[in-house]
Amino acid sequence: MSSFMFRGNSSTACAAGNGRFRGSGTGSAGSGPRASGRVAPPLRPASSSSPTAPTDAFPATFHPGEIPITRRSSANKHRDNMASGVTVNDEVIKVFNEMKVRKSQTPEEVKKRKKAVLFCMSNDTKKIIVEEGKQILQGEIGETVEDPYARFVSLLPLNDCRYGLYDATYETKESKKEDLVFIFWAPDGAPLKSKMVYASSKDAIKKKLTGIKHEWQVNGLDDIQDRKTLAEKLGGNVVVSLEGKPI
Image (cartoon, rainbow, N blue to C red):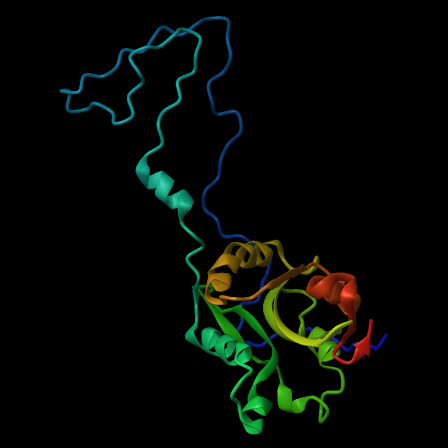
């Protein structure tokens, strides 16, 4: 197995996870109704003509001993159904479209096409952007990059999450193939806040990367260092080599 060198420092364009939450809402346990031996009398529904009539009044049929459940407002339902609110930068979509096009390209265009790239959250955690300097070009393979898969693994930060696209070249017992793989990197050492942000925003980027057949969530180096794991994702035991390396 080839040795790996890891570069834990991420670009300043990416939000750095610190594991701290700034939520202002706090709740106190046990604030609900206390059980007692007495049964509360039925509550009389407020008159609809009353100016103070509540919108979620209890039903007219109410049995003593039951705890009524109010209907949730439409605003709360809408809030629960909202996504994380994160948007995907246009450059991310442009990079993806360039990576998935393999036909009708000149040799120079092929060299400029990305073999692998990382995406991260912006500093304000409102956008998914292309991480600066975290990419491998097809033209670098065989020149400055001997093993593209090993180089890709070395780009992943050890203490934070990322999204990634990897253009895998592999061989089966029948033919040679290329497939894009969407990778969600969420290492155990990443801050909890970062894991939550990236997990809740994953659908936003996946909706933009249409046509990808393979998705891989990785939670540690042990899973991603061994290329056999990726080979299994691509085709199970029919894959005989990945990036020219036998499995």
